[in-house]
Length: 381
Image (cartoon, rainbow, N blue to C red; front, side):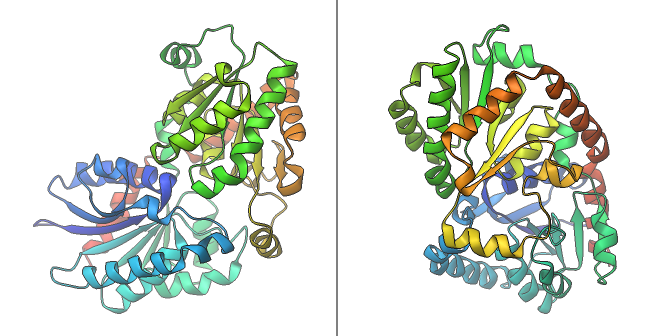
C-alpha cells in the first residue's frame, strides 16, 4: 500500500471503544500516517481518532430503552452516512460491535462502493440467527473473536477471519493481585469483591441499587469485606450517590475507570452480563453474573435466545461454570449469597480458575496483527 489511508470507524459504548482502541494500536503500527474518524471514545482518541460523536451516544441496550433514544440514534446514523459519502470518502469502514447501528450503516456504505469490515461477529450462535442475512448483505469481511465463528459464517457465504480476542493478549495469563492491591491502597489480607454493575446508564439504573443492596448484606454478614467499584466518568455522580445511600460507603472504594485494576485485585466479582464478564474470566476471577432490564425487553430477548447461557464465560465453556442470576432471580439476597458461596469454596474457585486459564489460552492470538493483515488485503483489492 502507498499513500495516506483514511478509515472510518464506529464503536458503541465502553467495550467497543476498548476493542477499537486495541485495534487502532495495531493499525497505526502498520500505517503511522493513518487517518481515522467517526464515532468513538477515549481509548480510540488516544490513538489519534477523530471522534465526530462520542461512543456513549450508542450505549443503549434493550428494545424499550432503544425506543426512547431511537430518533437521536437514527439521526446520528443519517448524518454520519451523509458525511462519510462526501468527498473524500473513507478507503474502508470498520464497524466495531454495535450491530443494530453498524450493520444498516455498513449496508448503505457497501452499496455505494465503500468496503466494509465488521469487528466482532454478531452473536448469531446465541440469539437472532436471522441476522446472518443482514450480515451477508452489509459486510465484506468479519473479524471474529471466537474460533468457531468463521466456519459458521462460511456456511452462509460470509468471509471471516479468526483474530482471537484482543483482551486475551493484553490481560496477563497470571494477573498480579498484589501489585493491583498496592495501587488501590488495599492490603494483601483484605477479602475484596469487585462490583461492576455495567457501563450504561440503563444498566446502572436497574442493577446499581441491587448491587449496593447485595454489598450491604455481604458487609453485614462479613464486616471485614472490602468492595471496589469502577465507575465510567459519565456515571460517576450517580454511582457516588448510590454508594452514599447504601450504608456501607466506608467499605466501598469507587474508582475512576480502572476496571482491570479492580478485577486484578479482587477475590470475586459481582458483575453485569456483557463484555466485562469475559474480562473477569481472563483475570481468572470467580464471578456472579447478573442482569435486570425492562420487563418487555427481557421477554422479547428471552424468546430469541438459542442457548441456555447468557454470560460469555458460560457460553464459551458451554457450561454453567459461574452462576447467572437474571431478572427476578437477581435479588439482593441471592446475589449476596452467591458471591459469599464463592468466598467459602476455595476448591471451587481453583477449579473455575483453571477453566478460565484454558479459555484464555484458546483466545490468545496476535489480534491486532491478524486483524491488520485482513484489513490490508481488503484495502489492496
